[in-house]
Image 1 (tube, rainbow, N blue to C red):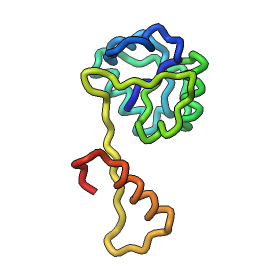
Image 2: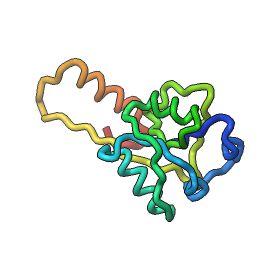
Image 3: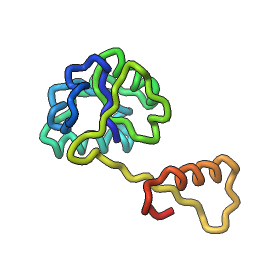
Image 4: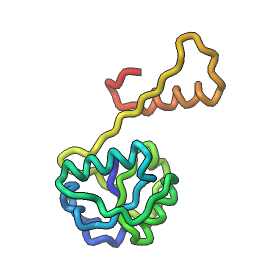
Length: 133
């Protein structure tokens, strides 16, 4: 997951950022019931703070727009950053960015609809090296 900041944010120019540096920031995240939001909250708790969630959206383009407008900062999965607005900055956090696990399963021998087959292929192609497909 990558940190998204408005391009003009005071921390946008820092070379190394830790999650702890963002404890006083407002946050934009997916809806609180989503697995991604729960993951972000767990990571913030592990860093010693409760995130101040200013806005929720399950659309990552909307999240990017809210970040650009200065509503808050966000952690966005790499898969959701195929397009990045020019008015935000994305950064990997130090010492290692928070990671999430994506699991896809299909019944053995099942005939899948073309969209499911395509999605499984995309996940295999974009998985980091060494990840089991």
